[in-house]
Length: 160
Image 1: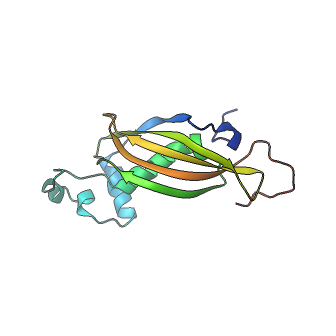
Image 2: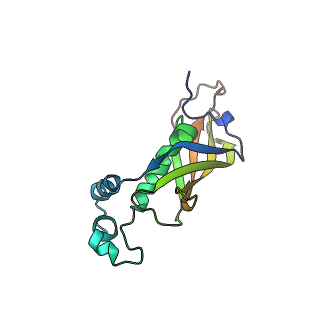
Image 3: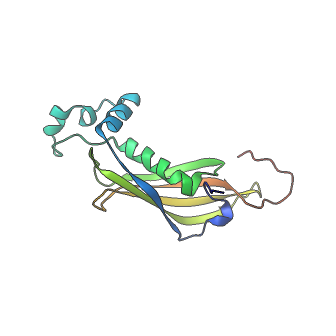
């Protein structure tokens, strides 16, 4: 049986999960994401304009890179989660361009049992996103509420 996500007990502080496979970002991906999210910044959708900027070409929408990295991490980090409680410290370190392939890894920074419900815990992680040149393009941290594998039997429900 395949596993999808982890229970609270399966997270260990210091562990690093390398998310596989990577994902090559196409012009189609970026253009549609920008249009669907109403991000009309010409850096994402106007090649002629983008050529006149310091980058000399269109940039991939940073929120697309973020969303893609979150998605890449689900099977390893939040596949069993009850809730994503918080995203913080989202940092765009370098630009991504059409044709770049991104890879992500997540490190477990901390974990603690829930103070209000004994059948769950909070895991604090940092995800780092690199391009095909091993250059970090984005980092972010988040707290994920995950169930315990063997919850205490106190009649509690699974509401967050």
